[in-house]
Amino acid sequence: MAEPQTRRAPTQKRSRERVDAILANATDMIAQAGSDALRMSELAQRTGISIGSLYQYFPDKSAVVHALAERCNAESRACIAEGLAAVGSMEALADAFGSLIDTYYALFLAEPVIRDIWSAVQADGALRAMEAEESRRNGALLAARLRMLRPKADAARIEATALLVMHLGEATMRLAVSVDRAEGDRLVEAYKRMAIRELTAL
Amino acid sequence: MAEPQTRRAPTQKRSRERVDAILANATDMIAQAGSDALRMSELAQRTGISIGSLYQYFPDKSAVVHALAERCNAESRACIAEGLAAVGSMEALADAFGSLIDTYYALFLAEPVIRDIWSAVQADGALRAMEAEESRRNGALLAARLRMLRPKADAARIEATALLVMHLGEATMRLAVSVDRAEGDRLVEAYKRMAIRELTAL
DNA sequence: TGCAAATATGAGGATTGCTCATATTTTTGG
DNA sequence: CCAAAAATATGAGCAATCCTCATATTTGCA
Image 1 (tube, rainbow over the protein chains, first blue to last red):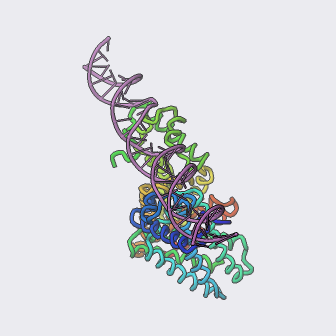
Image 2 (cartoon, chains in turn yellow, brown, purple, red):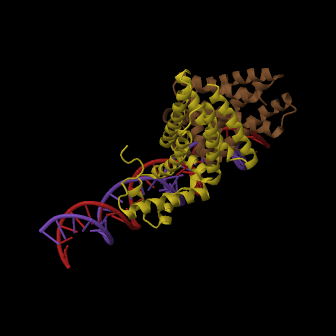
Image 3 (cartoon, rainbow over the protein chains, first blue to last red):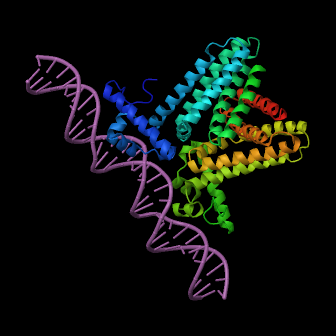
């Protein structure tokens, strides 16, 4: 573990502010020109620091993208954990899952840059693996609830279903925000129907 | 249309052979070292041609990846078109769809490099858009059949469902080939159940 | 055969991630 | 309060890589 994203732990206040400024500027750049357009030299210039200082905080470009992705992941992880926290029945799970998807979708719509950050992640081999891990973690979260609610069901099947449902949820979001709003809504609705039916059928 | 992937149309036999050799070597390189490791200079060297010649056939690196992806897309497009060709009832559609997925899955398992080519596509902004187009085309193929079989159903909903089912099929494949075989099989089975249920419910 | 068009070549221009020797600022110890 | 040491900042420049273009070679054709 150690320090996967920042080179030196930003202990001083100035350091933390600087890391925040770097990430904010990186987000702006990606939002404005797409994930392909993130240039380390420009990022340093925008932040008002030298290229060397930028590399003092982030060991490489990948780490900047990683940090951005980690923020998104943390946010959605929190959504998921909170949404599933107090679920005690299959009906409650279906409801919770449905509003979870709605929240997640709203988040994607409100922050279109999330999609571009995802693209940036996909462009980097190491980060793709990290993202797969994240998917698996979210699947495990859902699987844990399902095992509680369906103690008789086959554990492996629960595991696979939970992973699939989460993974396809992400895929649906990315598709939904890339089409016009009305169709995006229909896609999300269809996904919710499918997913909830599959979960309750376990 | 014109010539989206090769700079000059390979009219002479030598040219066609050369293009094939380039693509074969590109496939090998991606298979061996991942999609990040495709170097134009190395590709030229392996093929036994100069870097300049390589650029005579492909306007840029993106075009090489595009050509590879186009081959995969053509193959799966053919699968889909063939599989859905003679479908006359909803039951037949369900069957056809099921074995379509099986075929597609087998293709992915047999050619793991397909996944890496997909990664390479994702790493390029323009190619991502191309891939979205492809997804939409496949969705349209399925939607056409569905409109025949369900003339009363809402066209927009059919459209959205078909697109979603196709898109999630691709997402499922990518996930399934990245985990161990037994779990991959379970994921594909779960997806088939979900998708067929959603289609027949239209 | 001889000329024109097509094709091949690879040195080098341009871009960009990243390093490292040096300079500056901050902290610490007396 | 000062000097030494530690931490941080700087940006010229290295290395890797994509791609161009002026030149050389090969091919097709009259």
